[in-house]
Length: 140
Image 1 (cartoon, rainbow, N blue to C red):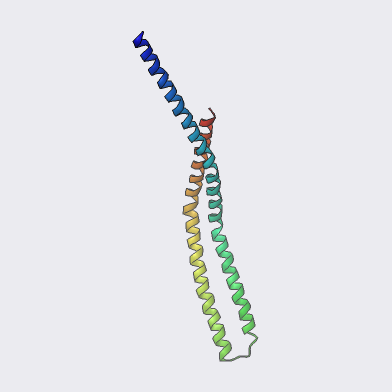
Image 2 (cartoon, rainbow, N blue to C red):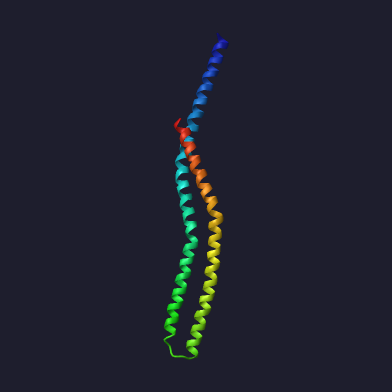
């Protein structure tokens, strides 16, 4: 009778331990599922923002050139002379420099968008999948 009770007690301890481990594992996966979903939404939003960057940089460039042209129209109303010429030259240099900066920024934004977008989308998909798997595991 002694050896039978020993194995029964060992088996009961194993079952209790496995039940506790299973319960904690379920709690952990529930937590992962709850946390992964908002992270996936944030990653998707970040991907959308990065995708819009080149367009926004282009709008800044258009505004810069529109402002430069507006200033030039004001300086053109000045009488001909050295001051008018110097102002127009300064505006032209500013527009050229600003245009070069906008073009560089737009190329950089496009490069970041092109290369980063696929990784952000993949990361968001992975996080959403992990969240779904964790939720499914916790519910079963």
